[in-house]
Amino acid sequence: MFVFYPLIIFCYAALRLLPSLPLTRKSKIAAALLMLLASLYHIISRYLLGSLASPELPVPVLLVQGWLFFALIFLFIMLLLRDVTLLCLWLARRAGAQGASMPGSPLRQAGLMVGLALALSAYGVWQGVRLPTVRSVEISLPSLPDALDGFTLAHITDLHVSSLLRSQNVQRVVDTVMTIEPDIIVLSGDLVDGSVELRKQDVAPLAGLTAPHGVFSGLGNHEYLADYHDWMARFAELGFTMLPNSHAVIEVNGAVLVIAGTTDPVAGRFNLPGPDLGAALAGSPKNATRILLEHRPGKAWENAAKGIHLQLSGHTHGGHLPGFRHIVARYNNGFLSGLYQVDSMRLYVSHGARLWSGFPVRLGTPSEVTRIVLRAETSR
Image (cartoon, rainbow, N blue to C red; front, side):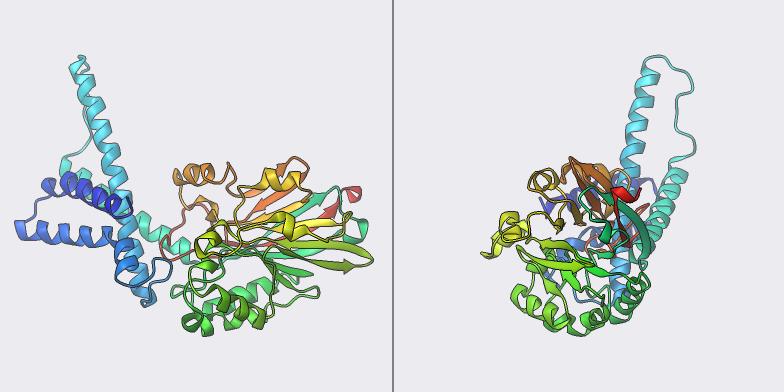
């Protein structure tokens, strides 16, 4: 399926677009080859450049690839909608309707669709690679002691340091996070794409993430795609406390806070331990407020039943695009972005600080780092 879906998109778009254009035969062949090349974006990255998650190419090349690929996707959707409309109009005429036709000539329709697809894709890629801004959220927790009222977290997820996010922009993200002046920094996975050797300099600015009560991280699926053990060591060098099915206990003004983290289900493919909340919480103080860093939000109901008070997740990137959001939500048990009440637990799903180069587009789902202020319900 991975190989065939782009070819289906290419064939449909080429056959339904190119015959209507007033081009020479050579020009149509050239246009078809360009569309074919654009459709093979993921296949080329995976099989020729060594990595779907982080093909090692210059940033301008990656951006042009993403722009053309998603322009083709948008064009495919518009052509499909046009053809469905044409079918409906044909049926209406067969039923006796008068004047049922599409406005404009086929050439004008084709030009409009191509222009709109290119412009929409360009805007989406621009939104996708913009640096994140701070989104502030106050979350009240019934279990939170008054001593922790106003405790501030900086939440980072889906940073995806890669050939598309180099050290200079990583430093800008770090600078943005530090403007929050958090009491603690928490990360919920998908921090890197590519090997430690390739990304060593790009992740170096992350050492600038500091907070009075520390920096803690769970794991996402992308951490397992290259050099898992080396990355765990590198994160520790950067000052992160990694929480693979484990927890840390923080004391603040005499109150106790548990920060737990889990691994990701993809770990099983690499013969590594999958997520185990029981192990993550083993030995933790029973009456403490528990915050869970779990990359995927889909197990929120299960985690709520196990005594978690606040779960922080990412993974969805906010669904990236209108329409596609419904698909992403479905694969994450309905959780997509923002704050949810899950039984007695609160769940916050971030849009993510960046995105991976295999899907470098956003429309209406801006990237974020999240400033979370905890509130005790008694303070309200």
